[in-house]
Image (cartoon, rainbow, N blue to C red):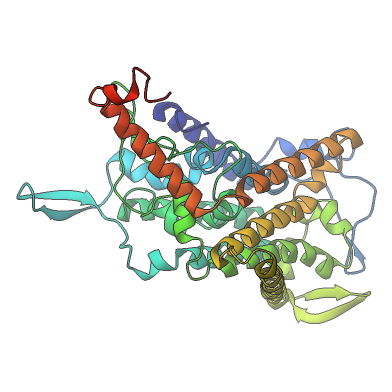
Length: 456
């Protein structure tokens, strides 16, 4: 759907989104506008209400607050996974402002270029550096990105949910990291090897989004979200072979060739635990669900940094004297490990049953089934909580419509992908290649086609 959009237009979209992100960062330091929307007498849905919110047995003091953190955590972030699943990898990669940040050195001409000797021309050329496919980063990028993501999610619980300054500096840091990688390496090295959001992309999108275009039937010069530049007569490829097989050229091929690499299974199953553990920790910390569903965690008056050495658990009306700085990572690690063991057990049972009923199905196909099912359960678990502080303010009929849409999109995605297999993708690719060759040879084989076109 987004594959054929001109690069010049998509750069403009990315620039607008990056600009909006910068405005958000500025608002985290200085915001004279949105506090008026949260005044008790403002009449908006976000106004401070009289309903008390208890945290560890104490009523949480609340007053008018800047909405920057709330807008990001409860409005922007909840939209991203569903957008990915619906419109696909190609759409997200072509609008992602962080992807644009990593490409800024290329666009502005200050990317580091290394000298290479071209054996064909005998000339010394300067080309962008790429990460070796045999390197540790290339082989284990998925678990590395999972580690980055889980660390960031835990940091949210500790310091970033409501402390606006910390959140702003985190945003500045991650944008700077993307730019630094863009200086050192060419292509989409940041997206493919370092970006923590790539973990979510792979789980919620692969092998293809609901509206994802097909890269292999037929093969195209510019497919999906591959690197490109604007030129006279249309876009041209700017691929530097930073990843093989590249998810930006053929997402499904990348999935089938990499989904069983080391750490992939743990990331899929562990991510479910990360989602569940992140939201359940609000209950374990505060002693109830009001703290989370009220959205009070986005604007705590005391600030999160002051809570790091206070009790991190409050269960059955009793605080447990484990500092929050230890309790939150401990809780996240426990949920991630528990989810991995739970899904591994479910996989073992599923394989034992299917091997008796359909022995022809190989382990690889059964692994694929479990990953797709796990992704479906994970995204629907995510939306039991994500955005709910705002969704719960909406009319009941609209809440039902949103819930139906989420389950509908995720179920369509699962139904389309769970039946796919690598052989099917390979045969479709081969058939498309053969059709292309036949069209090139249409004149030579016209005596055999009896006047019919190759398409016929």
